[in-house]
Image 1: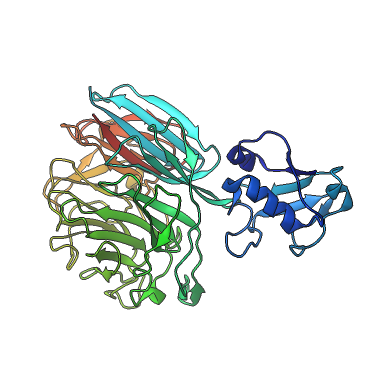
Image 2 (image 1 turned 180 degrees about the horizontal axis):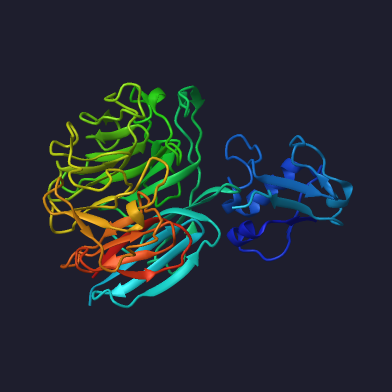
Length: 98
Length: 372
């Protein structure tokens, strides 16, 4: 089970509280987790990645296990602790004020 | 008893203000979508309880929300706005080519007769439409591809298609306005478009002051009974056209500043027009610190300051292009919101004003529904 922590605005959109738990087939990658997230919560399509290019939006970041994974290629395997469910995968709204 | 519902979009959420026909006491509901920029909300003329809202942030992009119960509850609908075909370039602020890129929806204009059909004006400027209640959106690329899109340029707020005006007596005719491209008209429901900027001059923003496109039109408005008469607030100049945009003439007259953003026409008096003069080019606050709506009862040229109930000292707010609206009750209500978070209402055509609310986030848009 993959644990995903969403920022507050996206939790509101997805109508969830706390972490989201997703079943993801191995290998667990950035792309496979985000695909599973968007499949479970279609309202999140376009809010984290562009609809067509699947590129991360500029002001969204991905953290896990104290690492910044924002700039990793989509098929980068996530840390083993994330794949085992020991640590969450964090979707973060960049520190951009406003 | 009849009433009004005022839909207010702000930098940090949407608010819905309701009152009965007297418009003296108000109920304020919200914020809806707290923390998000709400560029525009608008109700369907065919079903007043069907509302649409444009919700966006720099973090998470664009969403469209729909309500079927007058704004009590909302549901997100489709948010995919993909340009058709090659997008090419428009001009950047310094005149260099710049790639077209979707940023947000500025304006949602529900069809006059079908609650599921909505026109959307977006940044970078283009026209989209849904016919399934917002589930899917398709571009009408004829506007962007009219031939001179490469000469359009952004205004300070971006290159937005910010105004869509439908014509009740002629459903296939649509007017739109873009900053900074100008006014355009379609006579075939949005398939083909023609610039309608004859008579506009922009000497300090365009190298060719009377170019066919590139003018920073801030807002256009018409009265349904006079479908060929349009009023325009341009970056500078207030203008009118009496031939459906073929030619324009300046009617700024005695205004203290011919710069401003919104323009609106009284619901029952087609020659009664409202503007809010603003000092520019960079101040963007009312002249002399006095917040004054100006009303012309002669279709322009002769303007009267309306001040009763509005701050007449130390007022340095702005009133943005989408932040003025009218109701259609007999006495002709007028409403506007400010960047200081006030929403003002007049139930008597502008003679007297009261603040419905004073401390909202900066107001981006105000739309009024007159309810049975």
